[in-house]
Length: 234
Image 1 (cartoon, rainbow, N blue to C red):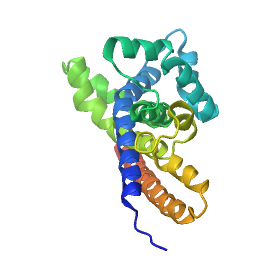
Image 2: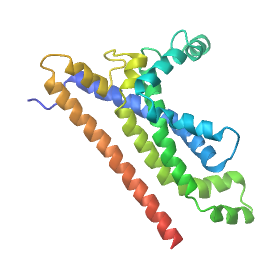
Image 3: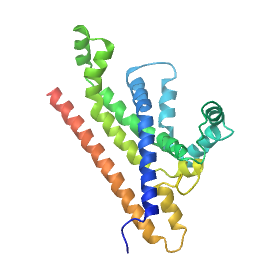
Image 4: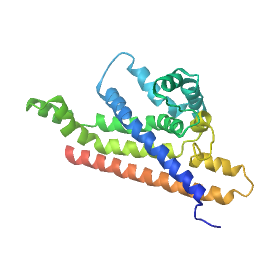
């Protein structure tokens, strides 16, 4: 069996990395903002916001894709607005695949980041305030550096989740070679073709290695964060 990917398979891999990197990059500031909001603020409807953030973890991914299709499709309110005002089309495009991956990755990213923000020693922030630090200086020099390992860990978890995203993506943007065919969709398509076992094996190995690397890096960052907190407390 030839274990080297063909040019078409390299194209699938590159597209998958592109989709995942764009998804995580676009979701990163949103996930961090939601994490900060849930960790530091008490407001009416907070429980509902929290439930909506974690909802993609528990509903079938196909349902998430269907909702994206309704909202961001050609006739959906968001899709029509994006097309009319910005000329952006998400349906049947790789950008739509990135959106689906971002939505599915969001809960894991928010969870990891929120835990890191909640673990910040508020006494350090209080001390900085008494020394005259402005809110922005306090955030950039104390709060963010302390939360950074958790933010990076959440980013890696989001990347691992987006690499493996299938249900929401194929429901929202379908399977279009060269446009929306990411690794999981390519594996599914190869399973439908007689003699596609070699392609499935190559794609499966690549998917496992990418996801495993992201998970290991996430765990290393999380352990570093936990160790740093323990040292600080001691």
